[in-house]
Length: 476
Image (cartoon, rainbow, N blue to C red):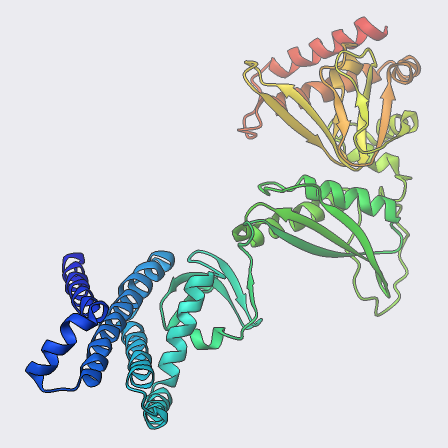
């Protein structure tokens, strides 16, 4: 009904209240003449006037319940139109209660039979419409309490999981991740356990479990897994991840890697990215995920980088800076490396330092922030196992270009200027080999967007001469 129609009804009820209220208030003035005209006794006439006033007041209360509460406040709060049946039932209840009060209080009559008849009628109607009524009133509670809203991701009784796409007064509609639509009657939600993943905010904690062999120390596994989570590409993380050794299983140590993402809708992609990063870091460190050991196979025991990096030679071979070097040169460089340990948050090098050295990350993660080429914004670089920094500082003896901090506990290997000078003094032809490696690396980095491009004739030779000249100028 339109607001104009509702206003007219309110106006008529107000006139009726004013009229019957005046008759009740000025009972002594009107009762006598009206009794004479109608032939009714003064007492009966007074009762009927009061009953008319009370009934008009009951009708006004019923209208207020229907239009101001049910189809007013409740609809505004829920944002949905309330079914007419709810309003009709409540209006009937208010009118019935009003009639019972009028009969009992004004006419002084016994209302036991009336209440019994009304109760029986209500029971019959309730039995016939119990499912509909329960669903409607459950829908009212859901729309008032709002345990979830459209767009929320919910899990209901560990049976149904999906996004709320619509809430009606009888059903709640979910869309699963496989794009199936589930219609859940509201009556079944009355006593259901509902997990709302979108409240109080969209963040979600995810957990990945990794089983690693006992050969890998807990400290090494912790650094590698922590760095892997931080280095996962495309994951919007909140706060710092955690890595805990949870269980000593038959086939290895079970680690729990937990991290919090900003949006629950990205949980599958985030877990995929984290697992991908973990496998990459473990592969770089030559660690494999432990599996069920059903038979004994005699193989040569491998020394892994993760076990205190005893095989530093393999680390040098996997480092991009030295990857193209002959094995004998890589071995000599590995023997010159010095093991360094840095706590999380500690500075490995400071910008402007004259610490002429290259650092190779063995375990953990380090971070460097530098300005873009045009100086418009800072760029963050992360270094994980087998990656390095400080190339210009070592070979061109330039100051460190930026501060590098340990984001996790870091195990790094340092090749400093004096050690390199001894190597070059003992093996002069190493200058040419290092210059070739530096030239090839410089070309590769300059053409990362198109790695298939081959250098033009003479370009690589000029780069080799440039780097060879830098090394000879500083070390010969």
